[in-house]
Length: 144
Ligand code: RB5
Image (cartoon, rainbow, N blue to C red; front, side, top):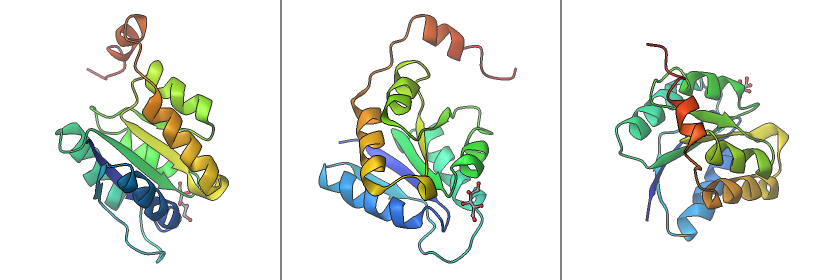
């Protein structure tokens, strides 16, 4: 089963913990880069190691969250090998995989319920990248 890199700040920590339990029960291996409590912290400290794990293949993909999802997504997308997509509905998560081949799913932890998060994660996991014209567009994302 695939390995998933996880990262959050304090605002995302409770949801991250719950999703690690949910996905571990499904058989996924969790590589948790922190944080490990609800004590105030800085999301880049956890986002960068998770991004590197996805870039170097240690993890097949990632799931990350902070309060809004914005800060951690901005950090993750500084990595050339990362396509991190902020998703607050299952349809967005499916399209992030189908059209953008997103390799890190980002969640706005303070704005979605646990059940919504599970539905978003499931939509991401069940979707398949469509390739073709979408691959051509992805190939143009990187700053050369
Ligand atoms: C933390 O209060 C909050 O700023 C952070 O979780 C995130 O929303 C930043 O983008």
